[in-house]
Image (cartoon, rainbow, N blue to C red; front, side, top):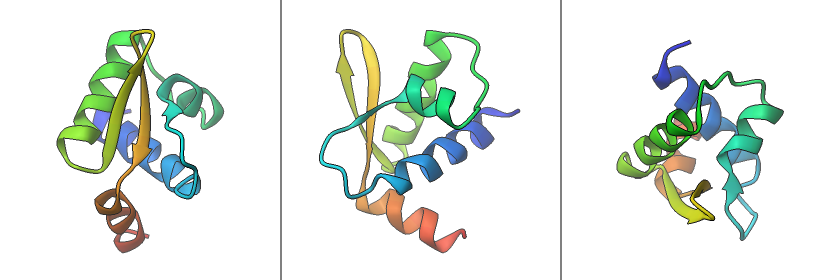
Length: 81
């Protein structure tokens, strides 16, 4: 699975929790949605990519990536479904 596909799946999962105030751990999102990842580095790269695109806000908690979807991310998911 390509990283772009993984990022899109993560974004779709984040969309389900768009009304949550707290960011979600990327590792848990991937585990719950059966998104395969190889390493913590890959999780960080996926999270940074979504942040760089403006689709999610990245927060590091104990050096682990947590994400919260942005309005741009919500618009992206809604326009592509």
